[in-house]
Length: 634
Image (cartoon, rainbow, N blue to C red; front, side, top):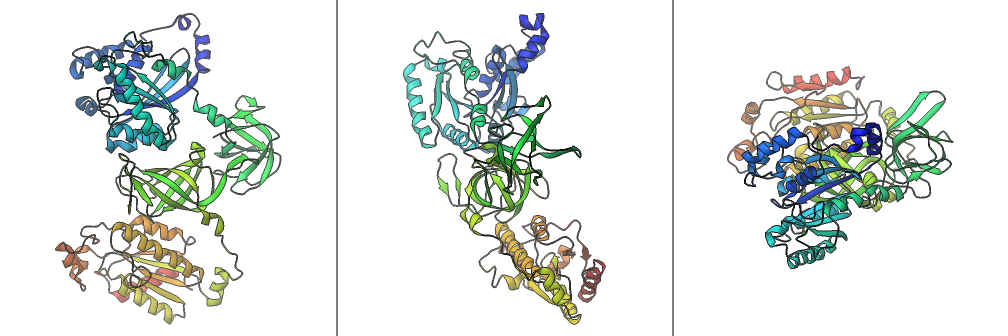
């Protein structure tokens, strides 16, 4: 390395022991384009002697090729690693760098300044303790400054360094610094940021970076490195909170030991303290705190431990062990802020996976109450959320979860949304509070259940879900199937796409969001009919796999039979009885499946029929035959 301390040279074991015990600060840099974020981080790396000789040689060479400092070292090149970043002089991806000083270890994230990279900035900010918000002294507080400050506040970062950079280009003027500081503090107060340390810098020249600048004797605050080395860590705040342990796994190495392992999200715990398992609500006392180093007398936030309890209570992965005196909330419906991170929009009613702590559940999201213009803070009406948009929505999940408001606990109040089909992370969310109806609405016990209704009817309940393009023959086949079931003495009901839109779904159009809601409502009705012991037949285009998967998930395994009426587009279009394809081709009918809206064919349906090679009567007979093969018809 460029610098090797005397301690490393003389006693490497002692150095490693001291390094191990250093605290770790995570911080981000954010601001407008060309404010000097990458230069600031590069300067910190350079001045903290955290560069190898070959890295120095490489950056000196790259500075001559890509640099903007007339042959001098361009510190930004130490961070901007992508070729596109170097060519354009901007940061695109989140760049993480590690460095350390004698007092502390650091992980810094250099986040993009452009609006289209909002999701990248949220990613970098999600684990940070401090935000360093840069302002170009020549330009003052900009729209980008306000936008990033709002995102910092949203993500829950409490400590902000207002780094007013490039003071060398403003003759190190105190009046310029004070004016920018005043402007920023007025805005920050509106969004709840109050722990702000303002400092004048020149990252390129090193002013107030590691040592006080001789050019700004009027400034008496800390240097940037001095602040970063001494600021209180978020760990202190987490350790002062109520005890929360999301259970990662149940540790059962033998018959005599059963413990609950995980990383403490907040608070502390001691043997003998009373805890509550959530969402079940059962209580017990801590018997032991087991760690890799043996039993502990106390464990605090950030430690990975295994708890054993005095009583045998049912706790599983995904549950949360809380302090009995200050338990988490439990609910299945919430209000939340959602940051959308996927190219495909967030559609109300579409099912997603929600991961909160160690628990993953099924979730649906309502139409946004509003989305936020992150440049003006204005609340705007919205039907969906597109890439990088932020909105406030209600979220419903399929079981109760233990949680805290994100403002109180980032670990137990923050979640991600995952696409059920691709398994990609598509959004990040921050819980606000449980909806009142989550506490007021409960499942009512009934004595006559589905099994009793099936026995009365002498049949097994099921959903026959026919999907395919318009004109594929779904309704014709569905009608024939119901006639055959009726002839067999079975109790059934046919839900047809066009018929349902005359009543239940008359308020819905044909946008992607409306199609999702159309299928969601039909699936819920089908679930109720299955609970009534009926065989339900649906004939809907239902173009998206995610919604068909949601419908399948609403009923018990084996009760859902997906039938793909696999008629090619060119054939379906020749059967255009309603003239819909002709209108779509002329541009008179938007969002028509197969023309300007996609149809996602089933990958593994229980049955595939083709009305090109078989008559509707033969297809209907094959459906009945398949139901018999699956044990749904005797």
